Image (cartoon, rainbow, N blue to C red; front, top):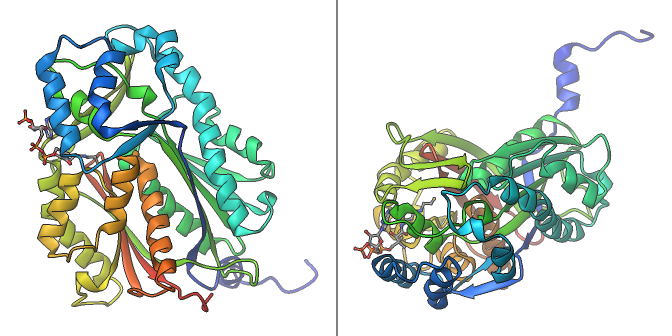
Length: 394
Ligand code: COA
């Protein structure tokens, strides 16, 4: 070497970003088929030819009524289900056909969301250095991330990571990974893309498995994308949120509370009716730990802004109750739940988008500090402390 070698510590300093990871842009997308929640029960029982299961039908009607949802979007429609009648009966082998359809549709929906995020970001797609992709709706390699990279025209050297079957915490996990990547690689621009389609686990009701009814009543399809990077380059890049600190916790002894498994007839899933209670009992500890590690004690939960995964109306009610949150604190989560249902890992990206839109509508006002949380199999709780930037800050 011509000059004196730098020490590894000096090299590390130059390779790492100076500032924290920030959210630079957000995009969302949904398929076109939209079913109002008050029509869903009739629609689902007709499509799955299960009209004779009247007790289950009444139960789904009760769940839909109490879901806090007005509508949901789906990739599958009557034509697709007529062409694949085996999807309605999960004792029949249909996984091959489901995976085939999802392999095309999952990256296409992700591309629709990512294109919006890239347009808002303002830089060319080829400036993206890393891609973190999350879905529960695929089972193939190369995965949807490669197809997405091709649809968007990302550079061949883009560094790709896929998170599979993380369920409702897939989006939050991806954002935490993106934060680590952005802070450890100066100049990195990470595209987080999540795309979840219920088609992989759509089948008719069964008397022995009430989880099916619950799942059919709650879940919808969508895709969300976020561009994450540190040290925004003005004037093109503008940071929306600083990603200050992220943690993950697992609630002990709850491995069986939320589960998913690919089986010959589609994705088998179970959701215990104890989930709202389990989360309610653990949530404050996660918040205290997250803010405690920043040296922030005595944080008032009502003084934060909230981007909470709306896993179900009962989860939001429970968390609101245990934390003593004022009316309106979870408004962004409730609105996303109302307009789209639970889109699994994607949902938290919609909520983040809704939070920033609401802040912008108030002229950039609102609490400076906030928290993003999502929950899924494990039971896993993801917590990220966020700091909102006012419109004149970068
Ligand atoms: N498994 C089986 N049945 C369930 C259930 C579950 N996980 N959760 C609710 N039910 C049943 C109830 O037993 C009840 O049956 P019934 O009408 O025959 O008595 C019916 O669903 C409606 O429940 P109810 O208590 O009247 O309404 P609710 O206020 O609890 O609202 C939900 C129903 C599903 C909207 C609500 O329970 C919820 O949001 N649950 C959380 C969903 C969840 O865990 N999501 C995790 C994904 S991260």
